[in-house]
Amino acid sequence: MTRLNLVLLLAVLASALYLVNVQYESRRLFSALDQAHSEARRLEVDNERLQVEKRAQATPSRVERLAIAKLQMHTATPAITHYVNHGSVAAATTLVPGDPASGHAGSATGAGVP
Image (cartoon, rainbow, N blue to C red; front, top):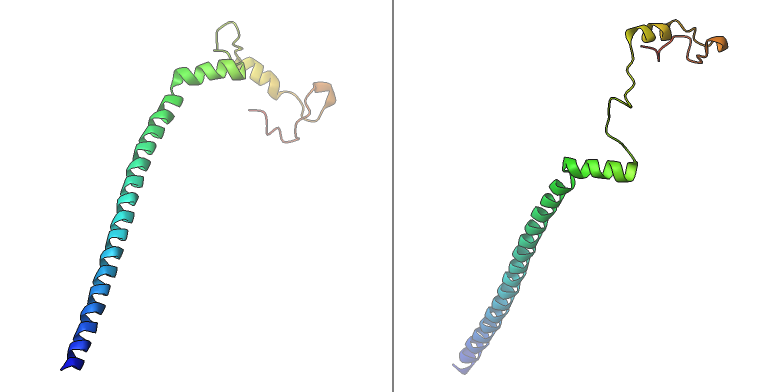
């Protein structure tokens, strides 16, 4: 009988140790899951902030301001606009490609002339 009691006691102790191990692992996994959820929420907030920042960076007024400040670009005005008439296009097509006298050094096919 004492042998049976000893075997049952060892079984109860093994079961208790296994239970403690399972509870510890469960708590550790729950903590990792909670941290993952917190990280996901932080990334969502960060993504929304970056989307708002991206929309703010692409506003037309900001693009125009940067074009003027950094690229020295100017808005088109009639004073600096050059208009091409149909007659000047026809004159350009009469140039002989490859002829140094005509001032045109294009290809013999005239592919670059409309």
